[in-house]
Structures are given as C-alpha cells and as structure tokens.
Length: 304
Picture 1: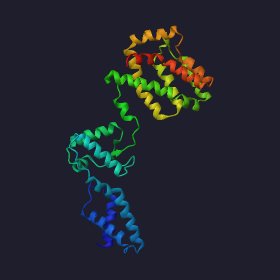
Picture 2 (picture 1 turned 30 degrees about the horizontal axis):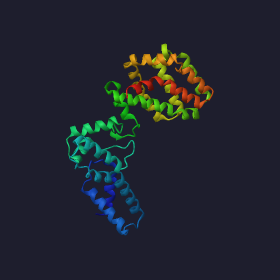
Picture 3 (picture 1 turned 60 degrees about the horizontal axis):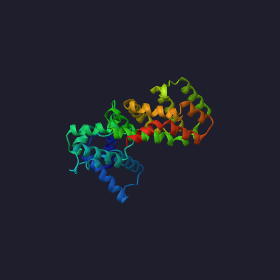
Picture 4 (picture 1 turned 120 degrees about the horizontal axis):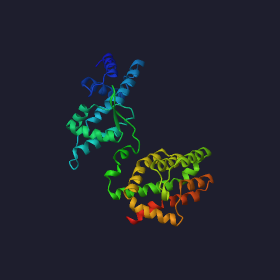
C-alpha cells in the first residue's frame, strides 16, 4: 500500500465513524505495527506525522472496536441481562472510557454481545438507573460519571421496604448524624449559627418534642451541610424519609416513649442543640444529640 493511500485512508478515518473497522483500516493497523517494529520508514517528517495520526486513531477508535470482539457472553450461570450488564461495565473499564465519551449504538452492542435488543435495553436501563449512561440529542448514548448514591436514591422507598430494612436504615441515620459531630464543629462559623437560629425560630414543634416534618428536616439537613461532605449529605437526604415513615407508621409506640423521656427531663430540643453549638461545646453537643435521638434508640432496642 502506497504512502499516499495510507494518508488518504487516515484522512477518511478522521471523519468516519463506522461501527467496525473495514479491511483497509485493518491494513492501516498492520502497516503501523510493522513500521513501529522495523523503524525503517520513519525517515520523513510527513511520515512521522502520519504515524502519529494513525496511532491516535487506533487509540481512540480502533482499539475499542477490537475489544468489542471480546464481548461475547460465556457465563451460563447468570441471566443474560446480568451478563450483558457486566460485559458493558467491563467494556467501560478496559477501554478507559471517560465521562462524556460516546458509546456504541444499540445495534452494534447487541451484535457484539450476541443478544437481542430487548435483553440489551434492559441491561442499559439498569446502567441508566445507576447514572452511568444517558442519551443526549444528536450524540446518542454517552458514558457519565455517576453520583455515588444515585442508584440507591432511586430504589430506597420506605413504602416497599420490610421492617428489618427500615429499622436498619433508621439506625444508620442516627449513627451517621452523631458521627459527623466532629466535622460540624470543624467547619462551624458564626454565619452557620445565625442560619440555625433562623431555622429554630421559625420551626414548628408540637407536644413531646415532635416537630413538623419540614422543620425537622431543615434543621438536621443544615447540620449535614455544615459537615461539608456532599456524599454524607446526599445519603442523609435519602434516608431521612425512612425516619419520617417509621415515626408516622409506629406513632402509637413512639408517643409513650417520648412522654416518658419528657417526664424524666431527657427530651432535647433543636434549641438545646443550638445552645451547645453556640458555646462550641463539642462533647456536650454529641451527648445532647444522642439524647435527641433517644426515642428512636429505645424504639429500635424494643424491636430487635
């Protein structure tokens, strides 16, 4: 193959987006490999530029198509959809696919995997739920960087969870909020105190330290925000509805627990917590926060 023909091929490759490499493109690959091996044709400036262009093409396009030949399914112990999902994830990892990069079309993926498009689409829908892929106008499917908890956010619904799962998540929420106390005090400033004061002043509280859900959420959400960890805050937003659901569903059990805590002087309000924050009393705040969640803790101990 003449050098001029190679150049023409590379020019064509720069603008073509064929789903699989054709015979001439494969020849380009073989020529490039031979040139790299012998190092006898790198005598001219133009040819050096050509080699660089071929190399870039191979890295961006051709190597991906070569790997797609390895997508065939071999595991018969799991469902087809599970296998397809796993193979596509392997494809992303092994080709170092970056966020925003296009991925092959459905027809090409189905052909490479040897499955029907209905199976492929179910696997792709799982990846969309995880936030790994999305479809963009005029670009087709692209790879995305998912949020760490994006998939969990879409499936955690207290209405469809069993009691054990609900109680475990409630316990996790308590442990998580108590655990971020040090982070809260590390980042706490006067502006945060002022914001918390506004939240407490407009909060609505009923008998036995029972807050309006919006007031409860706003105060505790602010604490997670002050902690400064976006993933922790995102997780709090996911599991807070579980706390509310449990409290409402088992209100008949919580009521006598809270009455007893009030009688013993152990109820801790948002205003009490704010006082410890104002005084920068980290140990006092953590202990008060534990008492603030005492109703939940007693309830969980009764249902273990």
